Structure formats: structure tokens, C-alpha cells
Amino acid sequence: MKIPKLIKLKHVEDDLSHLVVAEGYVNIPFVPKRVLWVYGFQEGGHRKSKATRVGEQIFIAIRGGFSVKATWFDHGKRKDKEFRLDDPWMGVYMPPGIWRSLYDFTEGAICFDLCSNYHDEDDHIRDFEQFKEECGA
Image (tube, rainbow, N blue to C red):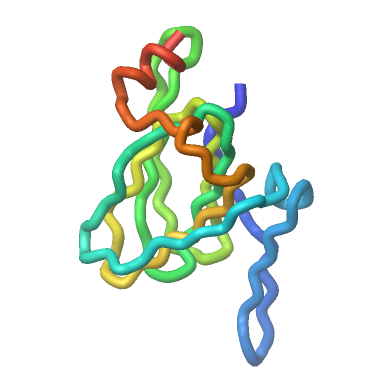
């Protein structure tokens, strides 16, 4: 079973700027098919929690910071892990079958999201009880 984990992206710095590189199958475990970002958060803001059935994601705080809580079941036993993202070269890898909550955004934060698949509403589980039924055993 794949579990959520912190990923360090390639980070290059010189006198002029910083460069961060995410390469499919090099420093991230998939080739992104969709990229999105979410912004406009108030201090302490959050996103709706959900899980995916198939899709993999990597969340990166490219500005500001936020927390990610991952919940999954390992042989019926609930596991929880929390991550704080506030460096633009660090990301959280979120495999399918993991309930994820993004919260405690700093004002002005930008959440960058690399996705392994195109948007498919049927891939999303938006109810925790349904998630437990499908992924809890």
C-alpha cells in the first residue's frame, strides 16, 4: 500500500532567483496530466476534505503555507499523519485511497496541485462514511 509522504523537489538557487523542478518518475512518482492551483485564502482557511479512488496528487505551498492531514486504513486500523507545507520545494505525495484535508492556510497562500489524471468526478469520494466503506478494510 502506498502511503502519503513528504517529497523534496529539486531546488536550485543562484544570485538571481530560485528554481524548483518536478519531473515525472524522477522526483515525483507520476507524470502529471493536470495542474491546478488554489488561492485567495483568508488566514486559517481550509478546503473541503475528500479522497480519490485512482488519482495521485502532490500538494505544494508555492506561496505561504498550509497543513495537510492524511487519513487511511491499514488492515482495518485507522492511520493519521499531518504535514506542514511552507517551503516551495517541498510537497506532499497523496496516493489514491487516502482521505485528505487541507487547512490552516496563511493569508495569501497558494496551493499548487500536480495530478496524475484528468478530472473525473467519479474518481472523488466526498463523504467520509463512504470513504470508510470503500477504503476502510
